[in-house]
Length: 121
Image (cartoon, rainbow, N blue to C red; front, side):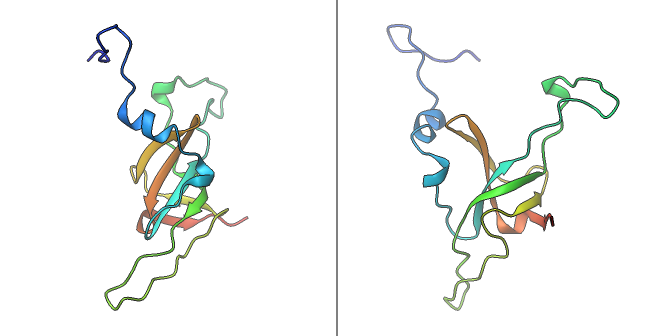
């Protein structure tokens, strides 16, 4: 499907690009039990030295938390504490969260329940 344009032939910006391009990662403040993750780089080459094209690269499941919400509000009105914090390296479910770009960086917002483990070290 071709990208739509205005009457002068200039392309319309995509809604998510125009809205999110104005925000920066340092200004993002996730709500509830959500976190913002910067995924690790995808593998460019196999262990045997074969260069992988973009279509063959696996989606990363590891990344670093760059922002964390305050925690989910429980039924009794108290706030659940977060198990993760900014700076933690985590493993998350393969197709979890919502991907978006901010200032050229690919980021991911996921719920704490989609984080599988904290990577030690």
